[in-house]
Image (cartoon, rainbow over all chains, first blue to last red):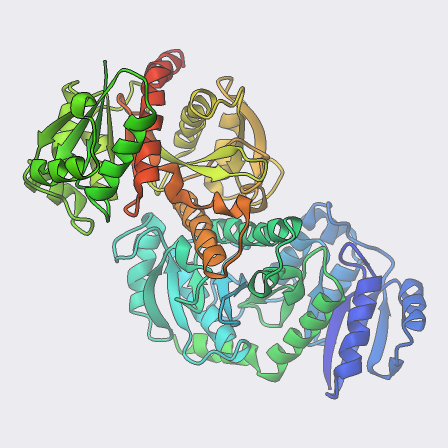
Amino acid sequence: MIKIGLDMMGGDFAPSEAVKGVASFLGSNSKAINLILIGDKDQINEELIQHNINQSAISIVHTSQTIEMQEHPTKALKEKQDSSIAVGFNLLASGEIDAFISAGNTGAMMVGALFSIKAIEGVIRPTIGAYIPREDGSLGLLVDVGLNADCKPENLNQFAILGSLFAEHILNIKTPKVGLVNIGEEEGKGNILAQAAYPLLKENNAINFIGNVEGRDILINKADVMVCEGFTGNVVLKMAESVYDIIKRRNIKDEHFNRFNFEAYGGVPVLGVCKPVIIGHGISTSIAFENMIKIAYKMIDTNLTEKITAKFSNI
Amino acid sequence: MIKIGLDMMGGDFAPSEAVKGVASFLGSNSKAINLILIGDKDQINEELIQHNINQSAISIVHTSQTIEMQEHPTKALKEKQDSSIAVGFNLLASGEIDAFISAGNTGAMMVGALFSIKAIEGVIRPTIGAYIPREDGSLGLLVDVGLNADCKPENLNQFAILGSLFAEHILNIKTPKVGLVNIGEEEGKGNILAQAAYPLLKENNAINFIGNVEGRDILINKADVMVCEGFTGNVVLKMAESVYDIIKRRNIKDEHFNRFNFEAYGGVPVLGVCKPVIIGHGISTSIAFENMIKIAYKMIDTNLTEKITAKFSNI
């Protein structure tokens, strides 16, 4: 039985949207999954009753504390041992759950992912990727989007492998094309990091490297996996998110730009750690929670972590 | 008499669009300006006759060579001494023209701006900025957008001063708000560069620093001048340009997103060099050329270079 842990206290609409997401997921799910709802049991129960949820596939793990969105991640995790995030990582580390999802304090989730559970052997720095919607309806992956603000060339090379495996097994892209985010088309262009990363990517047999991708290529499907350090990736991701806000504000109706609603994707996966962890947006809605559960399930079901482990053991 | 030099051989539609731009400019201009058209005189004359241009405000400087878009900048500038770009920078360096504009080989323009004319005393690295259209109809400035792929904190601090003076005198923004492009709101966030640049910007009395701006803030008017190294800036700029392409491709009609047509702005200014230099898009149309001439005129007319020189002499 697959057990997925869900932080019910994380996000701006906790626990209501999380419970609605659970309800939607259970309504359409036929798989053998147990959802472990982590948070204040009274609040959760009240919502469960309200949404008339069949509790046979659910367990509640009560926690008495919540890490607020603005708290200092390391400090909060240390001091609030009975918070939903701290408890979630403990359950994940001890194997009582197989994946952990939260739309709570992003920093605390990052710290937890890096320090409560282990990185896969050989992975120097785990990373987080984000989906990039393309006009043909498919999704690309931009990696890193903020976990690693400063990177070495070898980090980028590893992100390429991690992103490729995610794209292949979770986004169902066969032999995903990997591009290095850069400021010119040709080899030799870029800042010191990009110039040094290019030859590593070029010689990496574990990926299908197609060369540099520029800013103008990010929103089209030139590459399936786009690799950069987390500073540029985070700025790019947040700017893409803001395009959706402007589109909405200007009352533009467009199917493609609707897909810039990043909330709908339900959070970004942490890649390179030994258990699936998904970090959701603070403003996650029920759709986001439902999608996060589905992605966590798929990460477990496809044995993504084991595939990453195997790949890195051969490098 | 203000003399503005224009590379007639640069850009994808040379010299036709450049000549049309000159015609539009002269048609609406009442100022005492002499436009120095640099390029193949036969080709230019043919176009001048075709567009029925009054040649009293025009001089032609004949050149026999053209640096193509794909040529290696340094090599081409060295080997093609009689190219329109090389001659343009020579005229600028010797004071025969007061500003130089080209939509030709961007790399060659950058190399020329850095090495053919001098940086203003005290300016460690000149920079190029790009306009960012905001929903209220105003323009912001993103700086650097590609001239300096790797930066030190002090470079960013200087870009802030250069950008502020440009925003104040050319974009007519009083006491422009300066933001540091970063991946978090609070001081202390970001990569090593941003963390080190923040205190310098904060203590800089020559600017109106408002703190960090994130990717989601770039397209709104949180800050008028947004400072970053040229890697992130270039990726962000090219992505913003691609949003316009997608908008057009999807047949979306929207006044605001129409302003994402960066061609219309007519190129980006090089800031921190001792003479006005404007680098245009390869795909510059006549509107772009007309706007580039206007901006060059305004840079001369407002004594922007002298203002920058004065500011840096006091630091």
